[in-house]
Image (tube, rainbow, N blue to C red):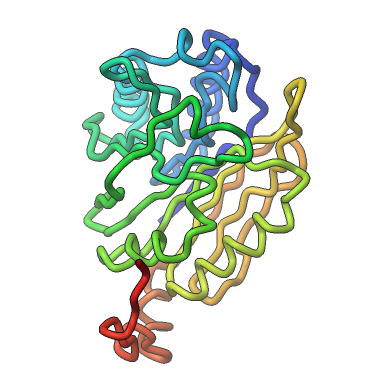
Length: 261
């Protein structure tokens, strides 16, 4: 399976520019004939302008239509990072996944909101996980800060996922945490992590880049730098079965002893 991860610099609050930029990146990525294109977090507005509520996509209609049309036009699955979405008067940080036929097969509202950045004061947290299949391969997704919660990623893994996608708007000041956490989540869950971060800056934030595609052994198959780039690499999903047969942590778990309340 071939994965393309779009590490891009977005303009804060400039929705029209960002849509055009993402359209161009999807078109260019499609020339590499990937199976899946992955976008970063909050690509419609960047993370996040003061007037985010006004700029948010009502009911996610424009975002879903854009991803659906792009996926069908290029015959590629799109894990749509996330977008600022307004539903029933509430603001959400929402991911949509479109399959290559253009069907929206999954949506996910970010569950863990970053209180130090006041995300919890603006947004409403989601209440359920994100599991889906593309080309009959079980997958899951979390968003940015979610990756700091290993129990949440483990729950996603237990749906049968072989790949977990982590779109993000992670700051450069903590990029070392970004790299370590994503490798840890890959190793401890014995699956692929596709972690796609923004780059560039706003008036108050420098994004860290360093998007990563990591195999179940924790090996970094592809990694971005500080600037814009498209990571594109093939992954061998048989390696998930291989490591789980050699070191079967799921067989050896003792869930009856785990109290996470």
